[in-house]
Each structure stands twice: as structure tokens, then as C-alpha cells.
Length: 300
Image (cartoon, rainbow, N blue to C red; front, top):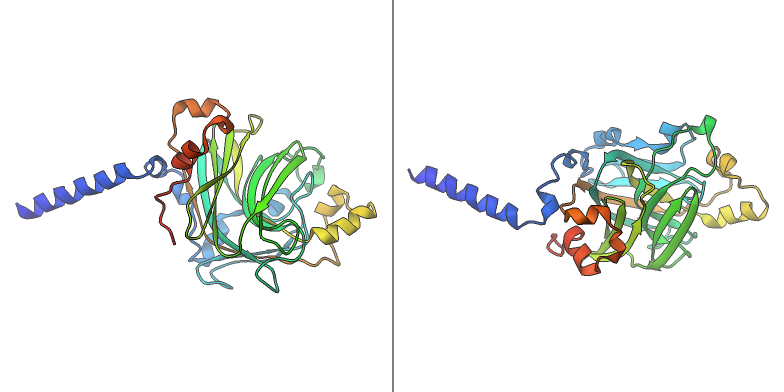
């Protein structure tokens, strides 16, 4: 029965390989269908847009799959900002419980390798669903965390990590570089862990936030925003009230972000049970990276 023995050997070899993989790869099946490789334009319909869900005007200069860039999602936001009560383009899927989401992205300006307009970034976001709509909107109800890449100061590559609690935002800008980068956002209980990896490099712990206030079910996906320079002009004149700003387009904006997304992949993390009840900012970076940002991931 040589064929039977060969099949058995192949099955055992496959099981051995799977058991050697990082834990969340084995438990990712229920979230794997949310993933998108962006090779089919029709998959854009599987994503929800926050502006459509909540009834705001869309602030998308461009949004397509497998068109402008074959095999990629293409995003260009209009002048907008994710800060405080201000909202910007957001493409998401609904996820309950713990998750790991990874995206490979590239951000450029419209005229060069780095956007020149301040706070022009794209990345991964986890957001509490709004219980209101544009018609019933109330200030002070934005709650989310994100990790994006592009530029904060304008003209220099940077990451932005930001957490917002009841519309009070706290941000951190750190150096990045041009080209493709992978971003990873993981939820474990009440903790949210942000990681990044430059092409050819290894996963690096970026930030960990403890957010016990966030609900079990979140919107998880891609956000984008650009051109804080124009927004600042309006703010100085007292003309950028969040309700008005979210409900209209800036007529003289200068958006400067072209976002390309190679893939977005969802999975479940496999971590110690004790992690789900603690603030993971107290766990060593090496432990977080080994569990949630795997050095063994294929390097492109």
C-alpha cells in the first residue's frame, strides 16, 4: 500500500508543519473569510463605509479594488481628519472578540514619495460603532485606536499611533520610511497591541493601549485622512465645528495622499488566558512580538 503510506506521511508532515506555526494561524478560521487580497474588484462590496453607515457625505477622492493598481486596494481621501470628533474615510468589517488584523500598505503623496500636507496617513483602526447617525449626531462619542503610516509633520515619513476616549485624542508620531510596510493591530481582552514591520525587516512592537471601555464588537479596518494644513486655516477662523465639518466637503482642500493596500488579513490570536484580563503594556516587547508579530512571517 505505498500510496496509502505516502498519503499518511504527507498528512503527518502537514500536521507537524501546522503545529510549528504561530498559534493564531491555527485558530484563525472563523475570521479568515474577512480577509481580502484585493485581486477581485467585487470584494469591495464586502466592506462597509462608515460614512454610508452613519449617513455622512463621502470624503473619498478615490476608492477602487484591482483597478488603478492591479491586485491592490486604492484609497485617496479628501481633506479630513481622524481626531476628536472629526471623522474621515473608514472602510471596515465588524469583528467580535479578540482578533489580529494585518495589512501591507504603501503611502505616497500625489507628487512624490511622501505626502507634503500635514497629517496625511493611512492604516489600521479599531472603532466602537456609533449608536447615532449624522441626523442624531452627538459630540463626545468617538472611541477608537489606530496605527497609520504616511506623514504627520508633512514631507517626512512617520507613523501615527492614536487612541481616542470619548472624543479626547492622544497621539504619538515616530519615524517611518517610504515604501511598503506591514501594520498589525491585535486585540486581546481589553488590550490593543500595535506592531509594524518594514519590508525586509522583522516585526516591532509599536504601542500597547489598555481600553477596557471598548465594547466586545468593533469596526475593524482601514482609515485614511489628509491635509491638516487646510483644516488648521479653518480652525484659526473658528469655522471647523465637527458637526459642520463631518457633514460637508472642504471646498479649497489640497488632499495629498495616495494609499495602496496589498492585503488585509484577519485571524484569532492564540495567547495565554491570563493575557485577556491584564494590561498588556506590562508584558515585555519580546513576548508580545513573539505572540502577535511573528518573526517567522514570510519576508517579501
